[in-house]
Image (cartoon, rainbow, N blue to C red; front, side):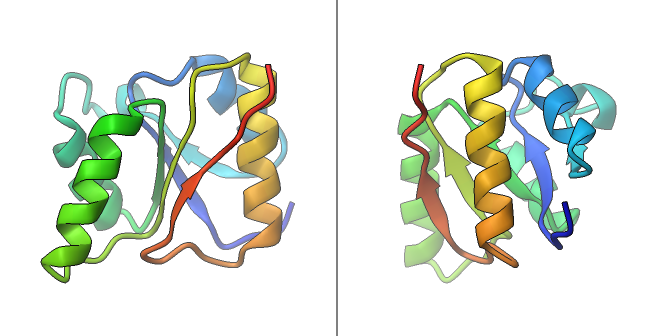
Length: 116
């Protein structure tokens, strides 16, 4: 799957999502792999920005607030995606579909309507 989007999955995302996305050829990093477990959501986003990675989370409320705050203050990110928690297969499919549709997600915030 050729894409320039690199992903960072928040700590609340099932590890199976990372496994499924990696199997499709996507560049995926998790907090566990990065040694970032226990970081706040904003710290996770700051790390993702430093790594030029779009972040995906199930923490909709916090990331909506962070995205608004960053936009209002002119801060930039490599993309924020979030959805309700569903099966790892459904979540991985939706994320992979976004990565096929977009070349990059700079400053884009996407709610993924994941099916059960």
